[in-house]
Image (cartoon, rainbow, N blue to C red; front, side, top):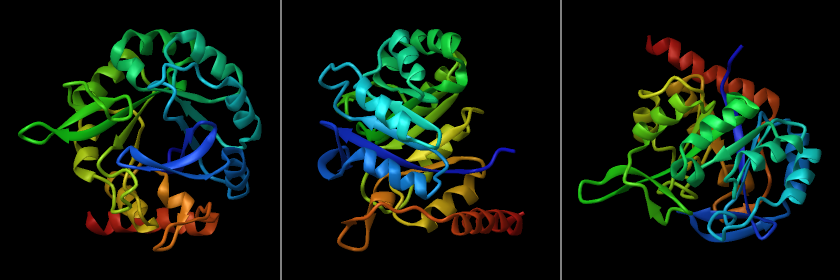
Length: 264
């Protein structure tokens, strides 16, 4: 039975765990393997790990780190960063990772999505679309290379294209909400949700479990991903790896469902 997923997203830079704001100002928050061990204990639904510098610096994926992460993880793991070829995707899947995320490579070579899906299955191919408003009319546009390069294409159009090419999931990441902890960009998510039928995950902006509950209430079966929410605690953003326990998570999903029913 499909149900909403609550997903921590960890960002890697130079082998360390960092958190960004609007894709800039990375703050070191610890060791990624230690974070994974804590998330294991908290029985998280799924984990996304992104190397934010690999593509920008034209680096190969860090296979040693990926192997360590996969060996440590007791939950489904999605890895992205520096992935440009089917061979790299196959290597990463072979290390024990369930899903591989593509971003700039999928825009530069859309057929990579089809070739990857053919080799490892659509369920293992995720496309991440980093989005912000741009131009005179402030329209949503997909960006790559840590938000520095505009594609000239809107997220709904690209998501629809990636679905047709064989992607198994779309992650919509709001650059403008990244690290702000002021809630998801539901207008952006609405735009993409209306264009595709694939499983979808929203990332960028969650500042409380209420934000997660509101997202699930609005979109029902969706992945609610967050970075700051699960690595910071309190007004001063002290580093503290956290995640709702099973009882709280079930109550959160149930609460969102009840609000959906009352709205019908």
